[in-house]
Picture 1 (tube, rainbow, N blue to C red):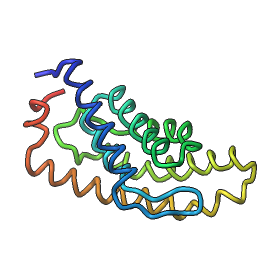
Picture 2 (spheres, rainbow, N blue to C red):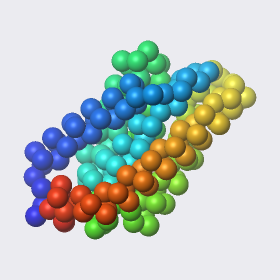
Picture 3 (cartoon, rainbow, N blue to C red):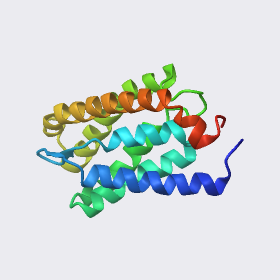
Length: 170
């Protein structure tokens, strides 16, 4: 059964709210210019459940709200772009969340996160050296989100969540 546009909009809203809450309020580690969070794991889940335009909207909106409402509004325009880019490689069209394409996408999230925020810091500071200080923190964030996503995806596949949530087909 193919879900309706309204169903996808509702799931998009729920995922945007989850991304916001997990990014802004779950335990996070402050860094020199921002913070390490696990919100990207929820973005990967959204991208594994929702069709692309909806998952991109949830990622961009949830990430932007987290920045704006937690004191990092200067990062919001860059966050929208980076978080949308994170969703592009994932697929919601497979029977399992944990498929080769989504595993590859979670690995591809490393250069997207690191490169995206490096470029953002470069634009803001005008320095090529200053943003290098944040590369390890962004790598930790990408690694943690990947590990959490892979764990969630394996558990969700074992519990047949796709069949319960989406009716088994896209």
